[in-house]
Length: 261
Image (cartoon, rainbow, N blue to C red; front, top):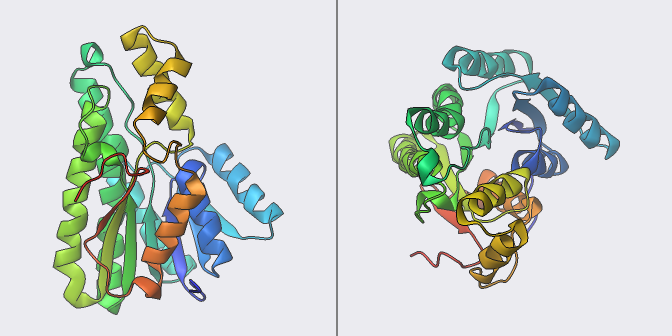
């Protein structure tokens, strides 16, 4: 099966690193005109240069998507200067990990701002534009922490749960207008955030980082963490016409550790 996005504008948030960067590369290889967005301008420029070194192109726009006005301005700019957005891949922001004794109002606000609002502020104007044209695909990279409760990921897990519901809600709301909205729930995946989570758990439990990682891997039937390229491959499928009858789906990618139905 050949997955192509030729002639389509793909807006990728969180494109400076991790899963977002892997998705930007996959979409560019599939022929999309890719626009990458992230908060850190220097890191985003480094990502753009890395793609260029592989013969791939990405337009870079630095913006903090927690600000709804900035997010809407990004969508408007892409539509005006690059072209109509056909694909939106949301991977911006990640909620920090907190031990239960570290929780407070600031932790819950950070979780919702970083993950939920940074996604919804872009999704809403982009979906409206897609619906006006009668076609579009949205893929939200969420996280299995919204389905599997963890004492170390309560604010982030709550934000992920809210985002899953919003994903399916938007899919139902816009299905008749040609817009597909799906989500991916990665489990333990090889990104910078893994080390942050291991450090928090180690600090709270008194175990070493290596012990925490070994315990995490032991709970995964496949015996390993996921790779960002694996998530990107599923995102490309969901964004392409190969998934033309798929909407409102939340795809788990956790090596079978959740075994959810």
